[in-house]
Amino acid sequence: MANQLSELPVVVIGAGPIGLAAAAHLAERGLDFRVLEAGDTVAASVGAWGHVRLFSPWRYNTDPAARRLLANTGWAEPNPDILPTGRDLVGDYLAPLAAHAAIALGLRLGTTVEGITRAGHDRVRTAGRDTAPLVLRVRTASGEVDEIEARAVIDASGTWTVPNVLGGNGLPALGEVENSDRITAALPDVLGAQRKGFAGRHTVVVGAGHSAATTLLELAVLAETEPRTRVTWAIRAGSATRAYGGGEADALPARGALGARVRQHVQAGRIDLVGGFHTRAVSPLPDGGVELIGRASDGTEEKLTADVVVNATGFRPDHTITGELRLDLDPILGSTRALAPLIDPNHHSCGTVPPHGVDELAHPEPGYYAIGVKSYGRAPTFLLATGYEQARSVVAALSGDWEAARDVQLNLPETGVCSSNLVNDAAGGLVSLPVIELASAGGCCG
Image (cartoon, rainbow, N blue to C red; front, side):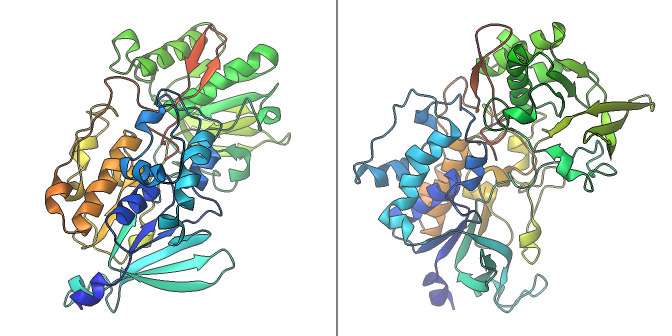
């Protein structure tokens, strides 16, 4: 059976930056693989925030194995010092990579993984488990259901499709699910395609991370030309001190500048800050708006009414497809137990996470690895460069090169490698508007 396993492909879930990096490393090492992408285009999740500009330049946003593959095709590598948008990342890098002959043959778009198990084994059965193939139950865009056997699974599906909830206790607020059509997802294109939905209206942005800051600052810019535009920022903390960051003392200057700009808008009254707001219920209003009912720290009830509500509370991983696998998940973050202390946002920012690879990503279930932002669980400290090194390490291990797999390194710049957008700000000058997962959406600390 071991020989049979070696003849099966490695299946990569997700054709985003990290999934395609894993494919590039698999191709480079001559391992058979398949890449399954739920979207109908490559990097569909990145495309959803394509208007956002990263504040990490090209030099930190491409994978070395991918660059080596593309170098033989006449691909023009982007200027390493330029800041790409998400749209640039797909068009100038990920789409050409996916079209490479070494990857295109194994790529299947419109294919959703519904479950993973072991051939002939549920989660309880142990005998013969380690030598049984992994089985992926998949559904195509046409509704056809199929199964694929694999020697290993690299899950780079991300978290973009699983946003956190508005509810302040981690559960959906009362009425949140029923009124989901009145709640806008994180990182809307406020100054572009979705401008009409925000211009001259009152928007409540819920959340204290970088995706919230992105929307707040774009709304502030919008309000310069659309005077009736109002912006309210609702956060769970009693004050925004932590959300503002460290200013000039921040280890990431771009992050400090971002916090300073948001603070200026709050102090100038362009953004109305409501602290200590824990959303308890969501109610529809007759005019199409929304009422958020919250509970303050002293137990009193508060209400916020809005034309538009933006849920910028972050993202979380969905482990339901691995219900029949034996995973060892940290009870707090939902990452592997070994990785959790290295990425804990209570102690780390995106620039202080130490190098890690296959050993920290391994589960009791042999052959299953979650990499990329999904590997971080609820920690918002992920960077693309970290995911690329994860992919390299895991693929090296699958090829039997354990020396390379365990030689994990992470060469990051001393400053700004999270993700952002640049716009002219009402408070003056250019401002950096980061995303939350480069890039889940985006690159870093959310």
